[in-house]
Length: 195
Picture 1 (cartoon, rainbow, N blue to C red):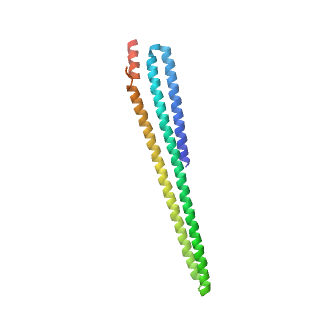
Picture 2 (cartoon, rainbow, N blue to C red):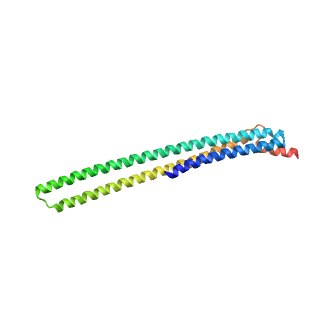
Picture 3 (cartoon, helix red, strand yellow):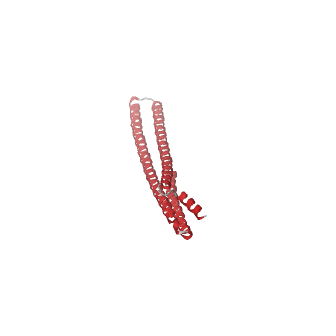
């Protein structure tokens, strides 16, 4: 559970850092370009729009990942609580049955004058069965929790891949969407013309 919370925190921090870095980069570009030449305002506008789209898409995708992660954590908690509850109820039922059986055997043994050794052997056998049942329940709980944790990890990895692909696609589309060429092409052409 600790590493899942850590993943959520890391995702939020990454989103904040990306947004801050992009904002700083855009501001610096605007200041530098305006100081150099006003003609480059079109390039600045295009770069700012592309950066804004990337920030929005990345932030939205990261929010989706965080929501999914939190939901998976909740699911893990619910599953563990249910399984532990079932295990506890099973243990209680088994203990009650053992007590009833032992009391019944003692009563029958006293009434029939049976050796107490027989009763002790039966009690030992019943205790072994109870221990075996508890061990099986614990193993099932561990296996289920491990499976759920693996599923959560796969969901996080898949979401990270989706975020990366979406951001790359958005950047490519934004760089090709301008009617007068991409930001890089405009900057290179303008630099060449000034020379």
